[in-house]
Image (cartoon, rainbow, N blue to C red):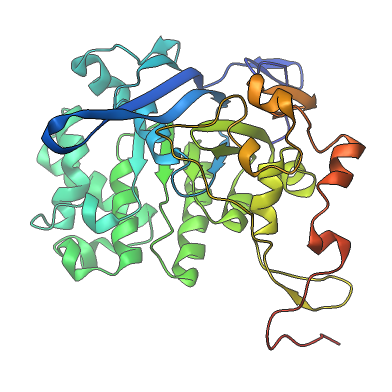
Length: 369
């Protein structure tokens, strides 16, 4: 998507038209009380801490990070499945935080989720026809004949033959087929936003590609916007217009997909990219992923200041004393770091063994000719 984003990212300029964000998250905080034996409070889990970003109409925003970085909790807090402790979630100029259940029911018609495990989100006792028709029963006044027509139309949209699948049950489907049914149910009410929470990670590689193509097809046909949560960095790059990187509950970098992957600004983003096995473009030798030293701190007791400082080779005293804020260093590219990698000194200090050319090839790797 070709856009020019303003600092603070509250509007996007396309040509001469200002486009307002469809979804605007401001300073979102989600915490959970941890309890031990006897229900005694043992601490507070800082799952999402002061996260802010925007999603534009028709855009796909990828969200990446390690397991435990808060990606799923962020998604659940946005849609108010888990009520956040503080912050704002603005959707169509309405703040979802603090809304009643009745108000949220109306909003959720325009904001749907597709989960990682399709079998866990589909009622195993219902036939596919009933599964897909469920939102229509709850939100529309369609009669049974119109619902049947709509269900058939939805199944065709996701690439399933109605005659073959209407009367089956989820247990009779493969993982890819079940996920297509979940997608059909999610788009039944013509929502504006689909939140994909690891929606393809449980599928094999070939089926992943088919489902990704389906998401792109539906975005073009229905004008959908996506929050695409995944741990597969290659997949996120393929489907996303912009990418947001999370670490230990905080947003550390956000920017255009191609730019972020080509020249990351945050040391943690560089660590994620260096964890991908690659082929040296000059020699054709397979290279091992670069392992990051140190353990991820506990969200029960996150480090002060920058939470990545305990594993960062660039960390200095200021990193422990002052929390970095998301700042625009390049057009539309923001990073929360005191020493971003666009600084030549920081870039040189963070040079990885892979970049220095000292990486050993993978066992059994051969040089391509």
